[in-house]
Length: 614
Image (cartoon, rainbow, N blue to C red):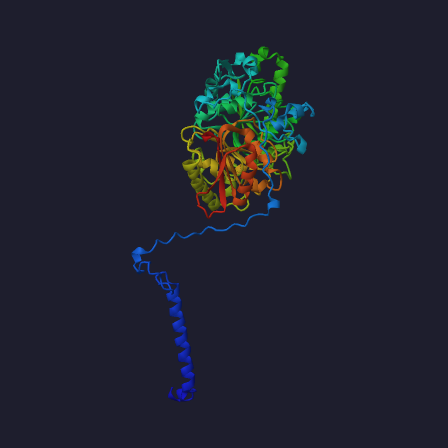
């Protein structure tokens, strides 16, 4: 070590002096800088004689202002780029009060009546055909009574139609009593009351043990059947076309019962395959044997494995009832034989026929059916088409194949839990990995996220949820159904919409959870009447459609179907929310932009429209 040190160069005195001087000057400059910039330093110029002496006591110093993280300056836009606000939209003429844009009678006349094609959805396409006005409420409109009172009565002036009360007087559908529409619970097949009818049905199929949760009622009337099943925790989608009775679906929604406009005609019903645990038809006037059983094949598509088809009315019990139906014995017998034959060709098993009710059951898999099809004259299985694709897709004259099963006791696609465990159990479509990018972990996490979001909504913005202020709820972009699942403890039902333009078709998952919903393109009008939803939730809807159609058209549709005292929450990215709020001012909405449950740094924001507080 000493040898190495002896070879190092030795600095001279001049170099050391320069280093010392440089260090000293730097230290003096640093100390002067601290002194002059300190809040405790005295001024360098002498004070006037009248000024009091300055003291350096900390107690005399002003408190420091809070830190500011927001920008303190904004860049103004050029004056030439600022356009004046557009005027508010006017109200439509009074004949638009009950207007349904895609079921418009004036447009129906352009389509053939064969197979009820004119009752299908026919939406305006040309911009000139789309109305740019707000749907007016009926004169004398009142806030509907809260559930469950609404199931039994509604304000007549909200749906001022006497046609059903007169045409179906002997069947107890609805009657007018003063200012009220009263629903005694009757129907074409159950004039003496829906309760007795359902009690009779429950002797054939299980309606109380949670096995049956989702149901479809074809030709629902005023939905008394679906309304009564709610007492048994069965959620029913009641559908009927806009026909000569006009307001039957409107009556159902006014009562707080799930319903939508729909018809068996040319296109598939807007539901995925394997959706419903039960499908019901009570004198629904569907020609089941027409077109070689095309409509029954569609029912088979939407029925879950092991699901039930319930038929009451002609031709069931024709031997004792044919006189009242105005048809011959031979005609009715031939129709029933044709239905029985179709059911066998679908591999359905007839469970029972008691009184006016007949019940068939779909097989839980197609192992035997595939073998049987080779021996009997049966429809072939569909090939190449997606059974879950049901938005403007034509019905097919073939049997929708079930997912493959290994053994005869397997439930094709996987079994579902009984309700209410079904709501949060892993849906079979997710467990089997058939939904791209969605795993069991993703599903569980989605449920936790929506639990927090809905808790925030209910705590701060939708405060009347527990008290029954809201009943009919629409989720415009439902995803996995997490929003609806989080609302399950409240006295509401949710129509879960999966946009046809979405990346993943998740509506089958929603039905496997025991919830209900439909496909939809929000560039068009929804299949419902004006003023039918109390609360609408739109998550990511405007981001999805921003470059597909006019934001104003979507807002006009929301305004049409939202009740006057209803609430709307739009959740989206902040730039989209800002744009939507700007456009919404044309509807004279009083909205406010607020942070999500994650706070101010979340790029998503909420636009809250609550008409009940204005």
